[in-house]
Image (cartoon, rainbow, N blue to C red; front, side):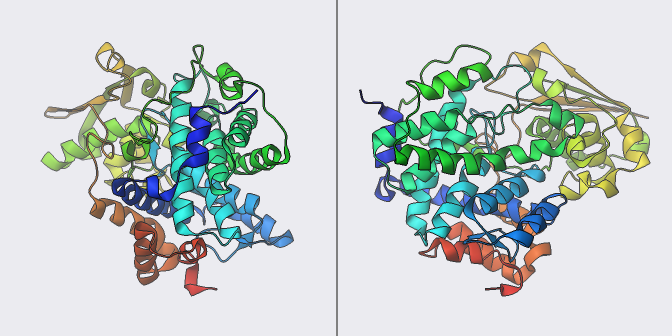
Length: 446
């Protein structure tokens, strides 16, 4: 009995020639943005310490981006996935309610680099994986209470990317995807709320599992029938229908992702955008703020701890994010580093109230918004955001994403090399994947 279906056939047969020009262009932007997040996160502890542990005992053909290290494929991909997650600045997708690119790119990039592969083949494989990841994620929505989306459905997308790159036939792809779903992690949202940085490893850990799933399927191991649905059904709040395959190859999910400039959970972004909007009208002095009220949707309203004590927990706290944005004037990387944990921030965070209201709850999933009302000594100011910036409804222009890239990459590579890296990654101009990876090496190291 054949196990092939529409999704596995799409993954097996997708070619570079099938990709419309807008899709190819978008991939360059997603790759540049994702690599920027990886390079920016690479020096962060404990990512750096884990890398040093691996480098002390091994080497291999795959690059650890933003460093001179090369490691076996699975280790390099895992480290890149972790580094790209730790700053909370990686690309995401509203309908997936998660982050497809950081699950897919590190895995297939390491495989293609180790294989001396072409950028065209990498591009095709990335799209196959991205489209798969989003559609599997859609099938799982909403997730059961307590699950974090990282590490759950992403392994299926990463497996699809590698399977396409390695040219598996549709039945072998079907088995690989079913086997991959068996490796979905038991990822808990509590880790983010508590600041347990195991959460930062979730996306990176899909890469070794995806590589093994492809190896096992190619060797002849088989997955259970309807394996993607059956394995993932326990992470979903409702029974899973078949993975949606309508308009495969006609409507491209990769065109509908979002980009982030606030270095915090996406749930905080509508509120942070509202603060940005109010700050354009006139500056906000923290000393003048009596109270801040944030009305938002239920999932976002759970991010209400005013006293986070770690980088990760701060990124999942609306009170802290709002307070740090007001005190420091931005919500970029530095606003969530330990140096930003000032008494003035905590004092203001204690005056931030977060609540779910029917207006915003009823708008999900089409709109995930927030209203911020600031009671000042002499006035009340309010702003409403229906859609956070960076998505299809309120996209960033390319100049803004390039500015973000430089903010993350310049400290690692220097301005001149970072400029060259942006051009290389954004245009996907080299013919070989190795050159893409070399563009992120500091000091021009070979």
